[in-house]
Length: 523
Image: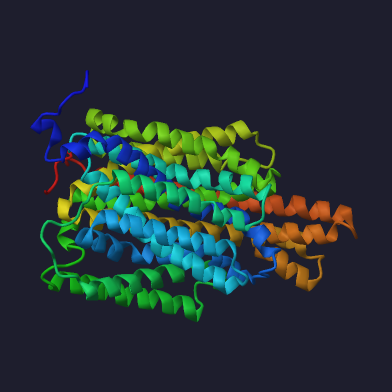
């Protein structure tokens, strides 16, 4: 074929020539799989008001677990799933994960009880746990070292964009179909990703078979599940609740046991020596901080746009898109910035941009025009698009090729845990201030309506809806008061996240000083 360039051995860098020629198609397929599982988290949030009114009649606790069962199981199974992919084949792990995810998505759409839906969501989490580490580790074995930073950067950009795409997709479906469509839509996307992966993805696994670390796997699942459970339930039950304290106690015991086992076994699932490399340790730390900030921002932004500004779920989702677009544009360019100014400057700069965007957003009031919000989203996403690819590349470059699945799983686990802590901490701050500031406006309501409206701004709007027919003026006053109370909470919550991003920037900048940004890691 004319113009067809045969790569030299140096260009191939050990990559199979057939795989090398289809590497960009592989990247597109991995990004599709990634967006699918990330968007699933944020799209379901949009469906909650519709689920609450459905024939499932879920309780408040069940609504919480319809959202969180997926995230908890996903985070808990990431490390063992990554290790199994390394051991038995990353392509098989990806295809198996997509099949489980698609089947559970279809089942979720047609469940007739809230408990059954929660179980289906947990099964979707298992599928996602096999998909996400496989996507990044397959990129490692499809791209030569010189191109890996750009491939990982593109992957990271779509990981961030997925969170903003979910509400748009969910909102569009809910305007025309029933709530089950939010779950059902995942199946055809998963089918496309499955077929493309089956055709394009290379067979990839450890070259030498290692013994499975069952003890480490069991302790990691228990530890992360207990940790996520306590973080999720803390804002709902109270941080001193027996179940929450017990969850943290189990998490500490199990994760301490996990690290003890990993130090002793001959072939650990996660070699703790990886954490001695600054790029690996700071990669985990920096990604946790960045996802803390990102999840916190989307948590307040969704409610601000819908309850304070009055947009529909779909219209609110559309207004979150500047974040997704910016991340997809900025992320692939991050390696060039790192090459120019160095890792120890590029990453803190990105984290400071995140802090700047959050601080600017914390200045938004009830009458702030949308263009200000869009500007804040672009600034924040510009920072995230600089940080995430640089740190993910550092994590993957710090682990040997035969542990790419575990390296990817660590990268993903830090995202999920950081994001969950961000939701819990900032959510608790916002709710606490909302309740204090809304109290005077709620004082005149009957006791049972006060208890409902104190819960959050969404519940207060439902109470205002009940009052509308009897006393429209009181309903209007209540809406204005709870809008302002939420905005007051949002201001403080976003500044807490911004302060943490600044502190993270300082730590990462100090620890990465003098560390080379070269992508060559162990092989």
